[in-house]
Image 1 (cartoon, helix red, strand yellow):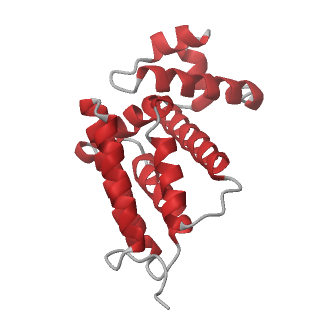
Image 2 (cartoon, one colour):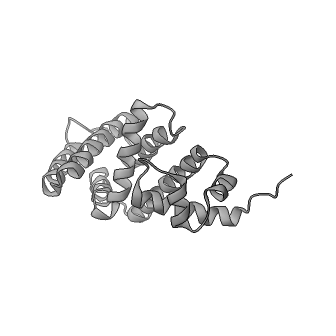
Amino acid sequence: MGRPVDLARRDVMLGRAADYVLANGLAGLSLRPMAEALGTSPRMLLYDFASKEKLISSILTEIRAREASLLSNHLAGVSRTAPELLHYAWAWISAPEQESFLRLFFQVYVDAISRPGAYGGAATAMVSDWLEIVSAIIGGPNPKVTATLFVAVVRGLLLDGLATGERARTNEAMESFIGLFGSPVIRTTRPN
């Protein structure tokens, strides 16, 4: 019977592995270069996480938790209308500091389309996490439907901005879209 996994060491390694993946992506991820960068061995990574797939799933879960916490902190104490909260959320997610997360998000998202199950439930969770956050911000009669629309527009504009580098245009498009949240087209509260 082997010794139990050192959970404190595993947590430290998970944090460092998440940083590594944010910096390098998942495409062509090999345990040997990753382990070398982390100051460990592929054997120890497999010992701590049981398999490469479980390591990747744990990394994606860690990164999602970090991003949700960062967004929550960004919006903490902001008691404003849904359009204002959405504006703050857009400003945060579209900032250059979030680019490594966005690149990883789109890499996983697109790869999961052609390889369903490749990331366990991580790809689905990357979408459902955002639906939960935006649904809570929006409220109103159909928050999940409105959140789905908002997340789809955000996803499209973020992808567009990453591909073209045209932040001013995508920011203007988002501000225009957020403006619809007070109109009869997209109403987040029932009219009086």
